[in-house]
Length: 363
Image 1: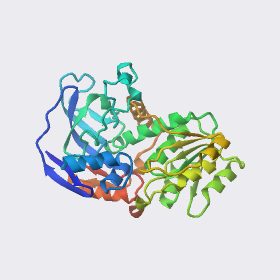
Image 2: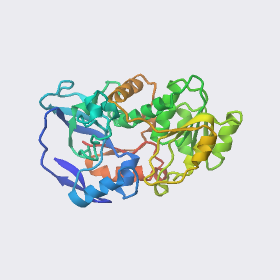
Image 3: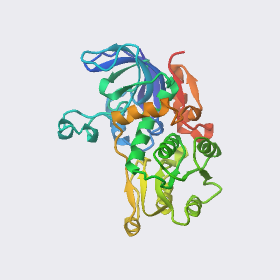
Image 4: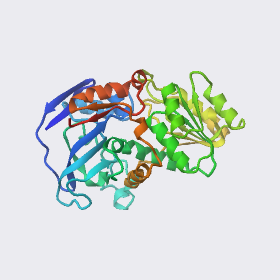
C-alpha cells in the first residue's frame, strides 16, 4: 500500500510499503478522508509542542516511520479475530488516546484515566496511508447523516466535548473563548448546547470572527482592532466572564498567540471563575500563581476524551446541534496532496483556512 512516512522533521515521502498484518481486536480500514491536526502540523515542521521529544526520538531511531493521522474517516474492509462491534462496510472515526489495558487504573475499570496507553499517529501508525490498522476500542460507528469530511473532524470535536464537560457550565454562565480555530469553534457550539448564557469569542482574523458569529457566538471580537480583555469586561458588567476557554496559544511561527492568550484569559475571567486550558505550548512559561490565588481562580485542563465522548459527537453532528461543514474550507483530492494539507494547516491565516485542510484519499 502507499503510505506517507517521515524521514526527519520536514522530510515526508510517499512510499510503497507492505500491507500490515491484521492483529486480533483490530480492523483494516480504507482511509476515506484525513486531516493533520494543528499539533501534528507543528510537529511535522519541528516546532516544539505536545510530544515533541518523543517524536524526535522516534525520528532519530526509527525513521522512516509512519507518523500522525489520527483525525480521519475510514471504511472497514476486514475485521480481525475477536472484533464484535463492527463489520465490513462500516464507516468509522476514532479517538486518538487509548488505554494501555494493563495498568492498575485500567484493571480497576478506570481506563478512561489511563495515561500510559498509545496514541494513534504517535506510537501507533496513523492514517496518512491508503489503509489503516485500527484498534476496535478506538472506534465509533458513524451515522449516515454525517458525511466523510465531517467525520474526520469528530476526534477533535470529542476533545472539545471533554473540555466543555470539564468547565461544568451552569445555566446562564457567561463564556468567553479565545481563539476561533476548529477547537475554539467547537467549544463555542458545545458550550451553547450546554446551557451557556452570553458567549463572547475572540480571534485575530476577520474570517474566523465571521464564522464564529455564523455558528452562534453572541459577540465576536477581533483582537487586532479591540482590546479583548477590556471588551469582555465591558460585556460582562465589569466582572469578566464566568468561564474562559483558552484555545489560541501556541507557536507564533504558525500564527498562534504564543503565551499572550493565557494572560488575557486570566485577566478576562471574573474572580472565582474558571479558565479552561485547551492549547499546547511545547515549553514551560512563567505564570503569576499568586494572582490566581488572590482572585480564587480555577485553571483547569480537560480530561482525555473517551469513547463515550466520541460517540456523543456523532449525536451532536447528526442532529445538527453542532455544525462542522461550514468550517471545512480546504479539501484536497488524492493521497499525493498530504504535504499540501500540512502546509495549509500550518499556515491557516495565510490560506484563510478555518479547519485543518482535508485530503480525500481516493480519487
